Length: 128
Image 1 (cartoon, rainbow, N blue to C red):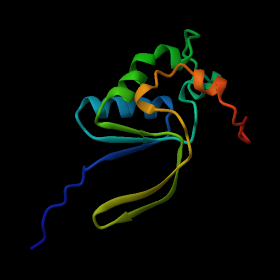
Image 2 (cartoon, rainbow, N blue to C red):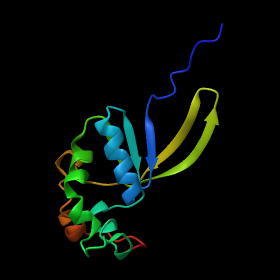
Image 3 (cartoon, helix red, strand yellow):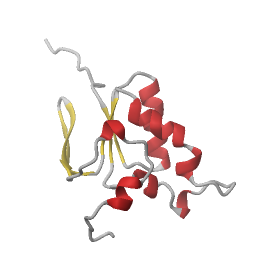
C-alpha cells in the first residue's frame, strides 16, 4: 500500500526580487517553512535598484524594510545568502536542490540590513 506523501516539508523561493520577498513573507506568516536563496551579497543594495523603484519614487528596500526585517527574524524562514543553486531535480518524493553557499563573515542573527558590512569589507569581488 502506498502511503500519502507529505509534499509541503519546506518551500524554496529562488531569488530575492520583490515577488520573491512578498512570497517568502506571506508563506512565513502562514506558518509554512521557507528557504530563501539568492546570490546577492547585500540584499539592501540589490533591492534599491532603479528597476524596482515604486511609482512614488521610493526605493523598494526602503518601503518594505519592515517586511525584510520580518523575514530575517522569522524562525520559519531560512535565508541562504549569498548562495547559488547548482542542481534542482524532481524525484518521486518531491523536489530536491543542491545549494552552494558562498563564503560570508557576517552574523545573520545580528543583521539589520544597514549595509555597513559591505562598506567596510576589505574583500573585492568581480562584481565590485
